[in-house]
Image (cartoon, rainbow, N blue to C red; front, side, top):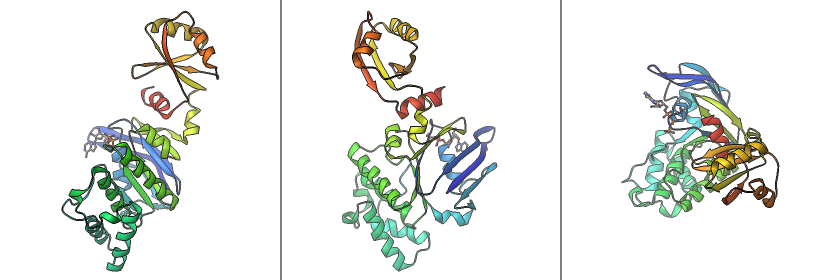
Length: 296
Ligand SMILES: Nc1ncnc2c1ncn2[C@@H]1O[C@H](COP(=O)(O)OP(=O)(O)OP(=O)(O)O)[C@@H](O)[C@H]1O
């Protein structure tokens, strides 16, 4: 649905995107991940025709990006784009006017979008009276008002509490159910794990890995990851080396990749003679893959 091939963009001497290639299929939720400053927002701005690429090819629904493709895209930017003194319904009506909807279409779409984001009972409330979570949902409703085929959500749940986050996640899943394709950026790896059919990780201005979570898991040759708490890390690392376990640091945590499944007592036996305070086991998660790809 959205195909980007060898996209490059520089600001002055700083090359931000370098031969970036990504493919978003119709109806999927695609998560674009990468460190701060990796070029995610720049990529979004180019897709939305707000910024011109230096080189590369982008097609949306088989059409090159242009003014004409703008109406196929709805964007919910990182900072809510809302008028605080207007009500929820007025905000939606305002943006629907910008997209040139007729009065009848606007009336219908305002209702549909308020329903989609569960804000029907706040239709007449000024934005300034809404909670942070409600504002975020309204911001997403604005992106939907002209019935786009692709919705781009730039960090949709940043700054929200967990309850508000659940609501936004449910809303995003509902967009997918309606056949809307979603491209989202996030720094929350559990958000990407929960929602995304496909994940692309940007580093150095290009997509370094792209695929489903299960495909990305293949990048780490481990059945399981164990975090070991010990005052004698050196001995634990030396023992792990003897056993053929790769070791990694995730923040302060010392972790080992287990190449095969082991029972807990077998794991404990591996570190026999070393003072171990605690062992925590987890499957290979996006966090481990992300660290490998972005810091490797
Ligand atoms: N208009 C501009 N002029 C000059 N430099 C820019 C401009 N826009 C972005 N940049 C630079 O390009 C780089 C990529 O920025 P971008 O906002 O695309 O990153 P990002 O991946 O979205 O980051 P974040 O996760 O922090 O939102 C940054 O170093 C930024 O300072």
